Length: 220
Image (cartoon, rainbow, N blue to C red; front, side):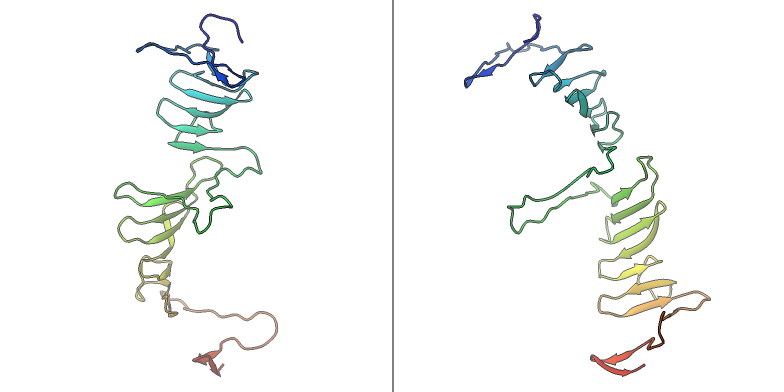
C-alpha cells in the first residue's frame, strides 16, 4: 500500500475483510491537492475533492461524475449548470437510455417529467449545449394538453384532452385560422382571406378526390 501515516486501508484477502472502527465524532480528512479515496489497485479510480466544495468521482484517472457546491450533478460534465447535467462528446454515444431488462414482461419503460407546481412539464431541445431553445414538447398543468413548440416558446401543434389534433391555433374552433381534426374523423380547415384547400396529384392523370358512403364509392 502507499506509504504514510494518514492512510486507512480495508484489505480483502482470502475472504477476510479488515474493518476500521472510528470513535464518535472522528474526522477522516481527505482535504488536499492529492488526497483521495482510492478504490482500485493502480490508484486511478478514486473519490476526491480536487476543487473546493466539489466531489469528483474518477475512473481511469478521468472525472466521470461530479457534485458541485450547488448540488448539481454532472455526468461526463465537470461544470454542471443544471440539477442533472449529462454530456458526451462521442458522436456514437447514447447520452441517456431508459428501459426495462429483457427478462421483464408486461412492463413499460417510463420516464416521468413532473412540474412540481403550477407550471408546465416540458422536454426542451437545445443546440450544442448552448441553451438555445430550439423546440419543446410539454403538457400544460391544468388542461392536460400535449403541446409542440418550435423556435422557443412558439406553440405550433397541440393534442387537447378531447383528442383533437390542432395545428396553427390554440383551440378547436372553426372561427380561428388553422386546422383541427376530430378523433371521430371530421376535419376542419379555416383560412383568413385565402384559399382554404389545395389538392395536387403528381404523376399520371387520375382521380384527385373520391367520395364514399359506408365504404362504397359514390363518385369522384
